[in-house]
Amino acid sequence: MKIRLSDNSVLQVSNVIAACPAPDLALLLPPISQTLSSIESVDVVVVNLAYPASSKLVINGFGFLVPNGSNANILGIVLDSCAVEGQSNDGGLLRVSVMIGGHMFPKIFPNSTDNALGIATGSVKKYLGIEEDCVMESEVNVQRDAIPQYHVGHDKKMKGLHEWSRGKGIGFVGGWYAGVSVNDCIWNARKVATGILDGNEVSGLERSL
Image (cartoon, rainbow, N blue to C red; front, top):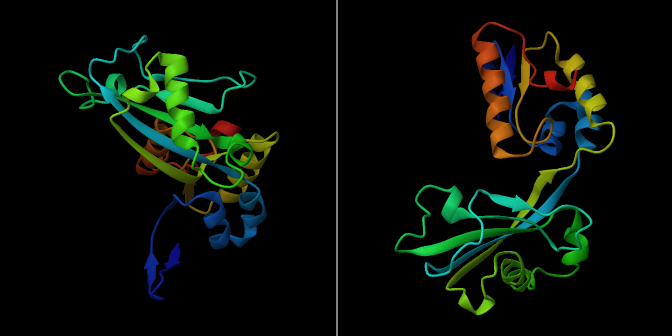
């Protein structure tokens, strides 16, 4: 397979692993651009909060997601001090991250994300019992197109892309096709890489079959 690089040089390769987001990949692969362009993503606001170590968590674990229909403005909370090595609250700060938006982003933030910090601290108080005025540090970041949306018919689209890729030496990795979490992305990428190293034809989309 010959790949033309941005400087117009040509690289001869046996396989290509495409790690671009679906809309960007659509620009590179015109034959399947319509399918790739149809995969939508939504924005997420991530609010990182730090509280005094004296603030105690009422639960111990990675965190939690808030189910649809709960009338909550958040997607979930990650308990960083429990889940992430080096973020322990022993003698330091208690840290949590609040995720807001997703498919609700336009409704929650119609004009700006200025209310994100208030939503986050209010949610921590509601679900974890930590008072809003205890916040010692905070940071608000907007992650654009952070969560691909698997609408009805997604598996059918992935099956079509798999069939198209057969015999072309192209594998796909990323959050747009078979799981949006970091764990899913790592697991799927490992399957693609090890499959190619073993001499197999792997698209990464086999889970849709």
